[in-house]
Amino acid sequence: MSSLRNAVKRVTHKERSQPRNRASFGLLEKKKDYKQRAKDYHKKQDSLKAMKQKAELKNPDEFYFGMKNAQINQYGKHVKTNKALYDERKDEMDPEAIRIMKDQDLSYIRMQKQKDLKKIERLSQNLHFIDSTNNDHDNDVQRGNHTVFVDTLEEAENFDEVDHFDTVPGMVGRSFNRLKKADLIQAAAATAATPEQQKRRKNFQRRVARARSAAYSELKARTKRLKILAQAEAHLITEKLVSGKGTKRKIKPAENGHPAQYLWNRKRLK
Image (cartoon, rainbow, N blue to C red):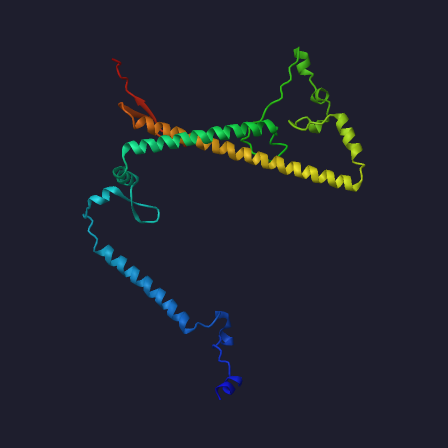
């Protein structure tokens, strides 16, 4: 009989929907939704009540020595200061071990600097520094000037860039791919090629442009990282010198990413 009872279609009980005249208020809240909302509301009220009671019972003259090594962060929580954290780690590690670790960090930074310098040099040899008026590359990339020397002042006053470079006025300002008039005539004649050849030439030019853009992006990133590594190296060197022997005083605080400057008192040699 149980199998026959399961074979008979039963009435599907659905949840009550929002009445039509209250459709503008959204979905009808069910009991499970109300319980969840009420639980969250009471939890927040209990937190507010506990904080209010804590503020009322607070003693303004209360003091603990731990307050000297704590501070309030941007989220309003009490955390230990950097000096307190450093003192804790200082007790755990030997000063000689800390010095060796900092020396290793300095050696690693110098190695990365040399690698970036060599990579930047190779990229610079394979790339022309393009003027920002003709392209969208970074302005921090070094750009060169084309200097032309003449014999007399009269030649300098009557100097014509178009005749000197044998090109058209639109390409005089270029520092790369400055085509001459003969090359422009040859390129104009080459435009009469078949559609297949033109498509192949456009694909090649697109690949070259993409490769040039990627190379300039890498050059920009490596130049920026080289500057950051130089600042990190300067900070480590300063920290190493400050931790050494000798009486010193700070003459300039750290600013703009550069380390602070110290002046050591002169010591008489024996």
